[in-house]
Image (cartoon, rainbow, N blue to C red; front, side):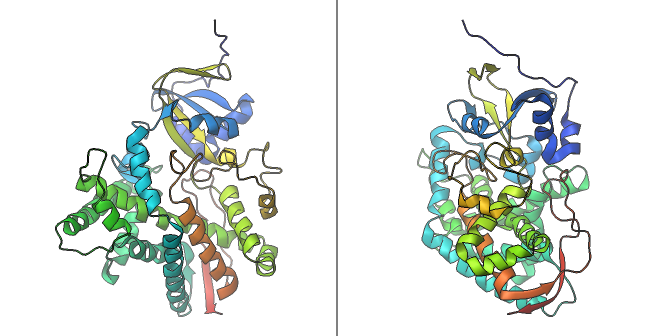
Length: 418
């Protein structure tokens, strides 16, 4: 006979509005008040389990216990993910599709990404030096849109840049929004899929030559487990799953700039201690500042964990932000301290800014290596390759708005290349 424990439960009919009001702190607040890393609540009218911490991450990324198909809310699929992309797959179908993504993340391809990005940073800095002021967040989105398209083999004309940047960035700016901002994201999803879907068709019909080894060609020619080409709309979703996350790194780049401003002593450490310290600084930015609030899955089959019952089909949220601020593995987690990564053991479950677990068989973000590469190049420019001033402005960032960026979007001026 199995002994079950009573799972801490939040009373009330539904707490979806509380999730929107509390943002990144919705799960951490309740973990703290319940003195538990797992609790039950109701979201979108249904029972949901929320959990956080290393042990919770390990069980959440057990593919025998959780599945992704059907887990993401419609508003997320209509904006951030799209329909039938790799994030929504399970089992052999997921492993097969994920292997295609990982084939795009080879070291030599990531080096090409870095080289392309360096050139775009040089162009941008020379443009910014002529501007009275630069809205850093908006400019880095455009810089990364150009780089992402070039790296993926997606043609992008200068006339299209503003439009495509707006469409693609709306996908990650809108999932948690309500009203016009959310509808902008849905419109952006439709427009981006139409644009990329037409490119997929042109590649397949021989009307557009896409470089082999780049995302557009690889995804256009990818065969599923039955040996069939992906539906053009699904192929478009997967190409966008390359472009969108690269542009979203603009959020991290802005937090790089914010950390350099708030902790000016770090700039000298990066200069004097070189690449090793720069990498620790980057990892601490990814741990410390908010990015993804949580990951979602459905219980695949009934199981018991730590005495708690998990019933098949139950929506489950893993607290990404809170796990990165968990005091058990992270001493003084609310203090910005890059040196902590000198002692980090590389655990795939206590540091999960872009998901946890294994890259190849699990659901950890395939683009995490690309994210770090982009941040390395960007940090080098901010520290070593340009001078700039940060005038007085509101640099606060919200723990409610998802994603969070500094309120002023970081305005800089008097930009000069070194």
